[in-house]
Image 1 (spheres, rainbow, N blue to C red):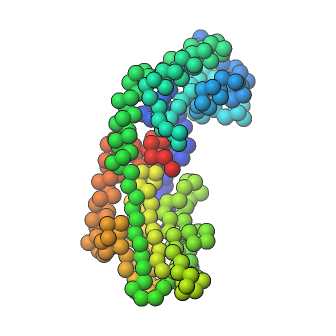
Image 2 (cartoon, rainbow, N blue to C red):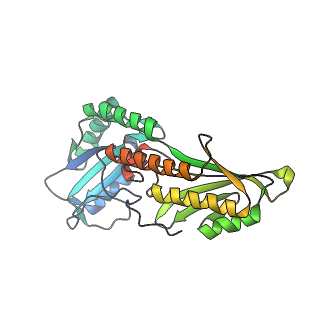
Image 3 (cartoon, one colour):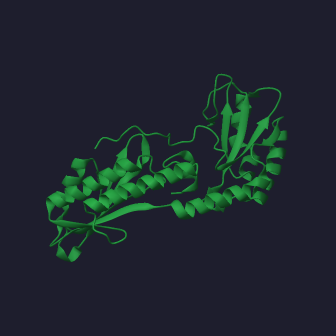
Length: 282
């Protein structure tokens, strides 16, 4: 299956105020490039928790991430950003306030003044709303396909899935595109060792909606995967609620996915967007 054009870049090209605490370091003069890139080796950078760094050179029209190998001689704008959520936990108004005061001291060493683009005292309410969205909207579409009798032959199953576009990684199969580092659809083959090394008792197929830039396409690919299994052996497909994935159920799944995608957009977290991936962590 051909993957459609992806609507969002994987890396955030600029600060995302909806999901990041951003502090701009402002000054009357452009910042020399060497001095700006020195932030990555500056002792304060570790103290600040290694935030994301964004800059604008004189030739830039928008913000962009700064890397140690960037070659711009000067920068007009400079900002540090911390995600509201990471694997260690979440920010709070109090922790953002501490980060801001530390950034003020850091900025003074760069002859700049720190200015928060979001007042720290407003963060608790924002983050609480995002936590509620994460709790209610983090859904996975998942289907299990089993032969009615016997097993799938692993070699035949692998050939059928690769015909759709899956890459094989042992008993794991993934649909990917060079433009996106995460799988757009995954399938896991469940072996039945007592029946033989090539006996597959079931195939679990699914994707996580919020982190997927093309969820409707992935659902179509899921249905095609179910049909490919059916072409190998008379099989049955069951969704996560225990329902048979027949024509009526497929239509219902399409409707529910469309509703979820719209809701994510309304919350400012479009599926697959940088904002969504900063909230719905992998």
